Amino acid sequence: MSTQAYLRVLSSLILSSVLAPALFGLRPLFKKTTMSVNITGESHPCPGVPYTYSYSTQGTGTVTGQQWSVNGGNLTPGSIFTNQSVQVEWQSNPADLFLTVFYTDQTGFTAVDQKTVTVLTSPNTSAPAIVGATSTNPNYIPPNTPATFAITPISNAATYNWTFPPCFTPSAATTTGPQATVSTTGACSGTVCVKGYNSCSFYSPQTCLTITRVPTLAPITGDAVFCKTKSKAYSIAPIAGIISYTWTFPPGWILNSTNTSGTATLLASSGGHSVTLSVPPSLPFPITGTISVYGTLSTSVNTNTQSKTITVEGGLPTLSPKFSPTITVTSTINTSKKNISVTLPKTSYAFSWSCRVSGSGVTNVHTGYKTGPITFLMRDKDFLSIDLYTSNSCGNTFGSSYTFQLVNGAMIPKDVQ
Image (spheres, rainbow, N blue to C red):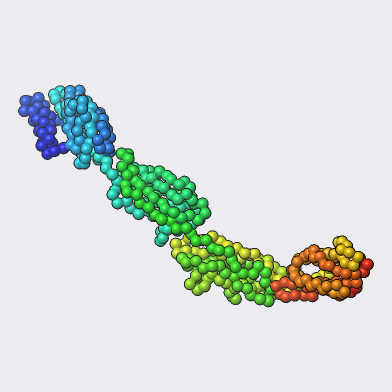
């Protein structure tokens, strides 16, 4: 309300409610007002939109009229300042609506009310930064976990519209508060953005936060089997940004020569991505256990965990009982040659073998780890020699040696050791 308009209303109040009745001897100069008035209507209007305002009264007396005045807006066509209700189109701040109500109680009185409104404009022109799930560095979000993002409340914003990368659920959200919680699928990366909106559909500038995918550890490298008399190295590829690696292993096994607790957190700067593992000779063998490792970033966010199952063997292998190869004459090439099939038995250990054919025909030598069958071309009277060796991480053990001779189409054992 302008200063002049306010003075006019104030003068009207003084004359009609106090001074005039007192001067004419109708009532005491400061008689208590018996009616109060309250303006009702929108307190946060949008500019250029008509809003209706009316009033209610409390107390005694009969209303005989009213007078409205507007600052920061205009009455819509058809509205009259003396109506019981008016329609106002607000334009800008500061803005208020002033009402004088006339009523009778013995003589004429007036009651007044003023309603200050805030014409909505666009929210803050500079939106605050988004804060992510971690306080020291919000760019890393743990995989497969809920994550909460928040911003400082935006002035004049009633809702907040969020968008998230596709690996978040949901990928978009509208909240009444300046924060949103979503869940992640796997290790997420992308951009989180938010705008603040008010009821007039005005919105703040968009503010965004780039999410960096949490790095993924590669598989552990190292032998799956080793001998109890040895120590073995196990490692993962080092990743920038990881400050420590946490290893777990079977309690009683020995990590890096001294640690038998079953867990160890090692600094990346000290080569924590690589360890050596051994076992005390007092354990029963063979024995199997699992080692695992994960990395921790500077934000206290952990990477994925990689695991590897390891078997420790207690000494040289044995073949007990001894086993024999299966020898089969499969077909006749002609009257002097036969196809001979040799099938080596499968065992719980790896083993090496060699087969030698000698005699009047061509000599064939086969060496390897195959469990067969292997086919040989033999002439009558040729010899077939087979040597079997059992192997493990601790070394090789001789198993058996067999010699056969092809006589009249049949394989005849000649010597077994």
